[in-house]
Length: 192
Ligand code: MN3
Image (cartoon, rainbow, N blue to C red; front, side, top):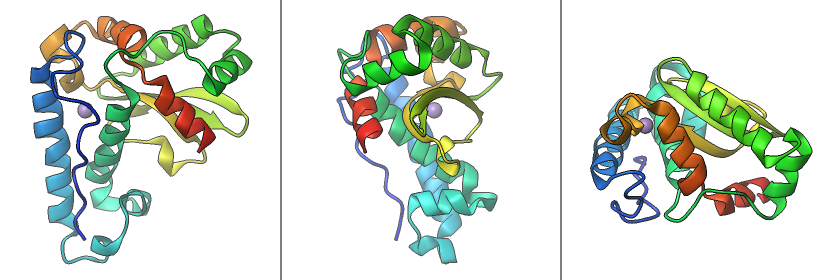
């Protein structure tokens, strides 16, 4: 059974001016769709063809990069929304205070992880047992291969921000935190 490219949770132009329709056109329509296409070509006719996306990721091997990038991107689209960003509310707000001391401290650590991931990769807010933590991963690497539960992610590959922010990754990270983060999604993941 082929792995499908999930629909975006919002219109392609809905994140503008923070992330342009042009960025989404390329990032979703070319990069994310490309990972799906390459993964399906690689698993066709193999034992992996009958497995779920997460099982394909956990199997590792030659299909890991495309499979993990399919999953990571779907998770990223859900981590952002029009009118998002700012201070969290609900259980995630309490968990952030408990684990980082304050939202401001969380924000500083998350932004620092995203800014200092050398080259391509991701920064994540994850739950590890009763605590929250921040991780950064390289290339396609993803916390779902570990015991940590992902709550939120930011894609810091250049294709995520170069059309809108050029080389200014810190500006993209600030916009992500101020105007895009989907805290409802983080709360769902925390409770799920
Ligand atoms: Mn990407």
